[in-house]
Amino acid sequence: MAFSPLVDELVESLRCLPGVGQKTAQRMAFHLLERGRSGGSRLSDALRNAMDGVRRCESCQNFSDTELCGICENPERTNGTLCVVESPSDLLAIEQAGDYRGSYFVLMGHLSPIDGVGPEEIGIERLLRRVREEGVTELILATNPTVEGEATAHYISDRLDGTDILITRLAHGIPVGGELGYVDGFTLTHAFRGRKPLSE
Figure 1: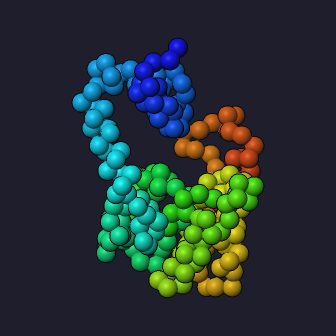
Figure 2: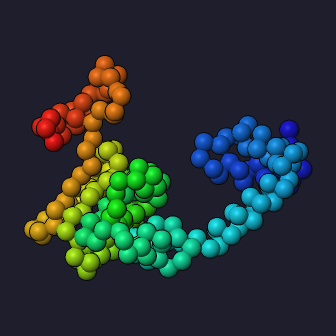
Figure 3: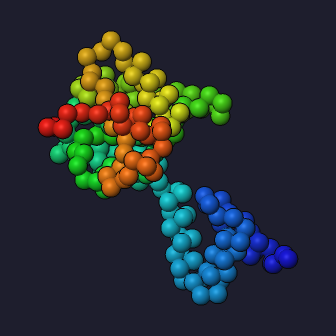
């Protein structure tokens, strides 16, 4: 059943969000129209402002509404350590953990030749230039433990081969509170390869 063109357009527009199908989009649209008109107007304004005003940080490529994001502008962040992540959500997860105090570089993706995503599309040359110009001493490759994430990490590492930069990879393995019987073989393999002395 078709509604008015404006309702249909609202439903279709909501479907651009990840995980939102036809039924979910209809529920969202109907909620906004029935009981959430003020919230809908605020959402509309926030979307318009974000689409017009949010860009990439000139230094790390993270989302920012200024030339440099708050992390890159912060003089208290540890110089010399640079953490490479695939997305702003990865950066946010690390920041919320609260332990890392270095700088970041956000790739906005990973290498995927089958999808036409090469080094240029994710800014690897920009990353390498920043590593050289800023005197980075440790590069932490925090790409996801997927085939594409691993390939991206290896590509970056290969491009820096022969330098004296310490290149590290986040440890992968059994989550805290996890049970061995529920862990997949791939994760167990990484856990065994990344084992370290108990005294550390």
